[in-house]
Length: 356
Image 1: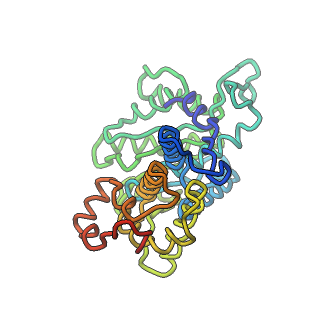
Image 2 (image 1 turned 90 degrees about the vertical axis):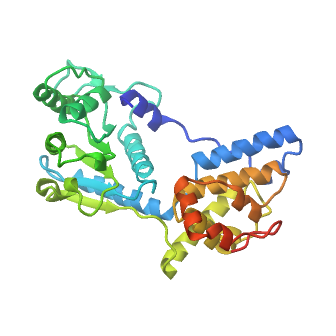
């Protein structure tokens, strides 16, 4: 990904939802039309899933933190980090926040135009305006690789010595008006290796250089409690750590939050399946859906998108238990089902409405 790709991602319009069945007055009758409609609905639900209360809460916290950091003096600013289990939606959440920030920061530019500007104090220089940089770290990323990734994102050459790459990166931040650098998969960095320690030093230097021009850094990863990166004294002294978990049903409050998510999903689905009853998902199927997905929103989105499409293809206006049972989810979810015996213990009854 480079700045052009990121601009296109941030400026892309939201997918247009298929016409709800209530507005169309009837489900498409002809087989071919119904199949096409089912595919459109399933694709829409996957691309625009129901808003997750847990993730929306995190988005709000990250936005508030960015606004707070922008008020800090230039120099050694707060470093934000987000940690979450694998596939919990951390990258998707950060990208959503960054996309909103990009649109806010670039509101004066036409959506289709290539953002260009004259850097402050450099009226004779015209450059691309690049307020956000997004790169992914690899386990073998060297400090030179990191600088090269950042410069390449901004459209600069990277055939330089490490020290020159560092200098050029610092200059480029100012030229392009960089306000935020996001390093994803930062947990991949192995700081106990000599190369990893050098990359860690580069990350700290980049964060400092960003602060000098009014920018900030967000680190994203699936860290453990004893992470070398987050335990680094220099980073920890400037660190604001956010944690994203998965949904749970261990307490009344957690169950209520899970049911709230399912209620939002039902409201989204029932515009295409008007025969669903209140509470079909949030009450009757809440425990079964949790056992299948273990609270991971990606698996939930896949499950409910596919069962909605299946019902439409069959000409039905609601979901039955067989729909939920037939969807094959991630290997992680499948492993859990095999290990816990969920499929056998809570096998849904055929041709009935959703039950717990």
